[in-house]
Amino acid sequence: MFVKPTAGRTVRDPVKSTLLPEEGTEVPESTFWNRRLRDGDVVKTDAAQQTKAASKVTDTTTDSDKTTATTDTGSAR
Image 1 (cartoon, rainbow, N blue to C red):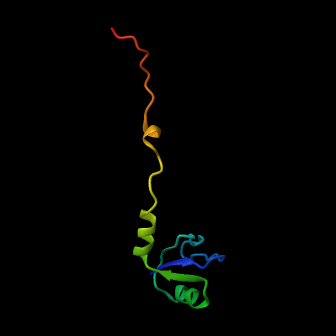
Image 2 (image 1 turned 135 degrees about the horizontal axis):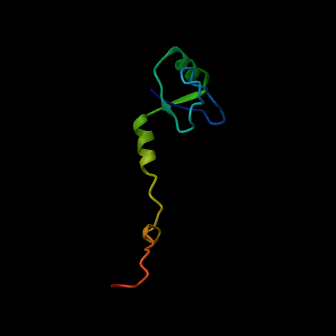
Image 3 (image 1 turned 180 degrees about the horizontal axis):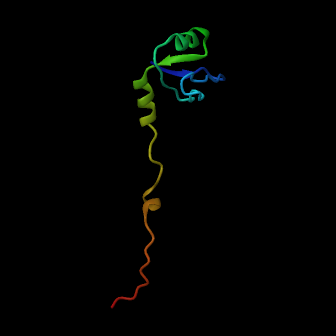
């Protein structure tokens, strides 16, 4: 199941010993995570919904940013 922490809360993953990322992550359905859901520490979300939101992030570079500098000194032989 895909869960993310409720706003203002931090939850430690018991297997990885790391904090659950704010954007959420896939976790196994277990007593621990079901208890976190029941207590309101995390919310269950649709993983597809999270993927869709991540794909909306667009490349903000412009064509002028993509130009490369040349080392040509202008002398041709």
